Length: 394
Ligand SMILES: Cc1ncc(COP(=O)(O)O)c(C=O)c1O
Image (cartoon, rainbow, N blue to C red):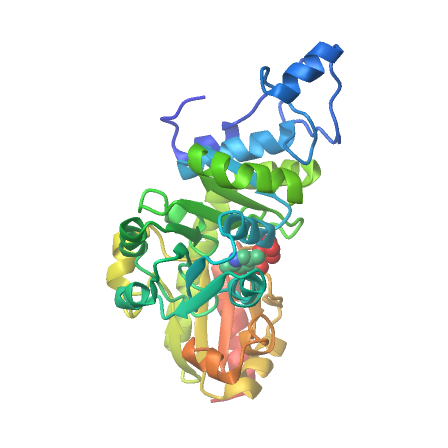
């Protein structure tokens, strides 16, 4: 395997191991266990004296290919494929804390991620302080002597706020904490958290990596020492492993990631620019537009815009519901990153569990809508939005 391959090549060939049949497509090893030539061979495998798989909860050949391909793309030494994005997030955080530790997290998090740090971790004696992550001073102020983990996503779900990853990583190093970045919204193509100094990267592979609405998956990536010390045992004994069938689906999905993300990003930009001109729209937030409030940080840490657009309708919830209901091609769904264009109203779906105050802090109003661009022809998408906006009036 060549480390000099560019991403599009890595994503088609990276990590592939072929069986004795020399199959073109990656094989699915849908097996729970593995057999040994002899008792001595089993003993040696368990002692770690020989390479090879032991049990599918620990690792298996198809998952191994997916993990290796993701490592290549991310520039990580090691990875663990998980059953979902939330399995990746919760494992990456919980494997490295103990009672008495403290987490600092950006408050603008996907609802379930926020629940893990705000509600679950404290049940086990791990306190969490949520901060407005856009200002580095807030991270610094929240640090305590027992702070072990920093956690953020950037751009954030759903309002596409951006956090200075290199700045937070530098502070983490200074105070001896580990920075975990949920890189779902940026995709592994447009942002490289490890190069920016983060220690651990997590993905919901359910999103752009599958990108075709088929299966759940996740992945945790980091250097080998961190995985060995923190995740290795946690992963084996708590069992968040990905199904080999899903690893195979994701290996096929990831082959076309650059093609899909390119088209999705072009479509997202076109829709963002179109919406910004419409009288019913109060504001548009898109990381690829010059009017994004943090365009300077985006230029520093992202190499592309985003496949998502957030916008606010002047008519509040009624207008948001009417717009969503009037769209034909764009379907209502809380999922994202799919080749089908999807739209959701965060206040009543993904972020419904937050208090009104917490939603207001994050800039989620009754009129906020999140659009996830698919790979359709952008002319059709513009026409779909134009027709739907016309039907809801000015
Ligand atoms: C930013 C972010 N992180 C994590 C997740 C969780 O991923 P999954 O649904 O695969 O568990 C999601 C979406 O669901 C997400 O949007």
